Length: 251
Length: 230
Image 1 (cartoon, one colour):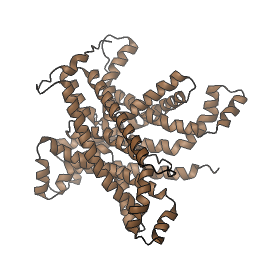
Image 2 (tube, chains in turn purple, yellow):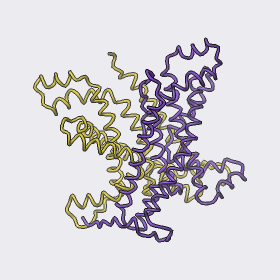
Image 3 (cartoon, each protein chain N blue to C red):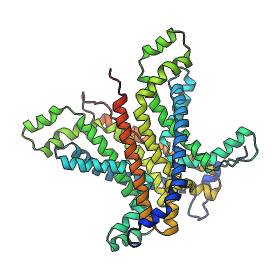
Image 4 (cartoon, chains in turn red, purple):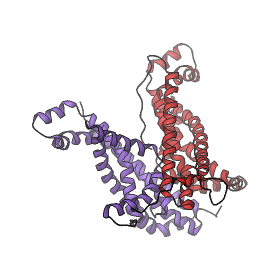
């Protein structure tokens, strides 16, 4: 094998002279986290709403929400990324579309990336929220109605507080997925962690050091999230109410 | 806007999109299923093995693969495979393996980690008594696995394996980052050449959508048919 390892590369300056390669990677990590977190907020909001709708008695609304889930689950993430980046601005009124395309550098790709990851993950969150609500005994909703609560109140005070606790583990894996999936945003020009490692490989010629560092950072972030979520699970656990984990597939 | 939606550009490039692009995507998916399930099953058996070292090794590999983005894994293998190739045949320089072989290896090894977890659940879904029965009949470990446990594990897990395969079929589009002409790569090349982003990407989305929905429908039907009444 003829590969020359050079771990000092992380402290070498990049050709742009803006800082060390380590700095490049950390900025990349920051964009990964920024993209993933913004998209996660979007995914949680849309996903919760859709998930709730899918369990309500309104048949047409449930069907619409089901359609959303089917649509976003059956198109590859990368294609969705391109649709948001290249196609979506074309369908807006011309002034708005142009305004999106002409945003200054990081934002012109960051905003479509967040919209894409958010709406994509929302379909998966919706699936979990629906599963969580349906995992509750039917009597809970009836009890809510018997107490004189309206349907929204039943959801707000009876069903959702327990449903969200039940689905914390699968939501954790969806959150891990969104962090990993944010790497797809490099295709539309977001310089997140994987793209930063790739840039480091291109300019520093140390492929395996760059990728090893990126891999380690991803693993550390993963472990951090898992621990944080375990802590959260323990904190919000209602004694005697630990439901079965609903495991989601995919990556 | 580039003007009205132009169906012509899709029709004109259809042979290229299907013959070059879709053929690549389907070949890659098929090879990755076969190799991925094979290595995944081996990994699952290792993970469940009573030999601590094997179990740790498999667990480590599976967890590592599952915590890293596929895009990064694609890059890893793209650069790593030439060195591994050189190491295997004892060459002094990295061997050129080409984008296709590189992506087949990537997807097999990456998906193996996901298939491994499915197969582990499948193996564990087979009652322990069956294994003991196998040993009692005088079968050794490999015979028990091949004749008793794995056939049932596959049957139990078939719907989940197929669902994972549909996800993988979607994921193969990520070979785009290596500038490979898979279905999406072909669509994107036409889009860039003719300036027809809207048509090509909407069409690509539609094709993926139809294939995946049809696939999920078949899986659901299969699930109903093979469900074992206990």
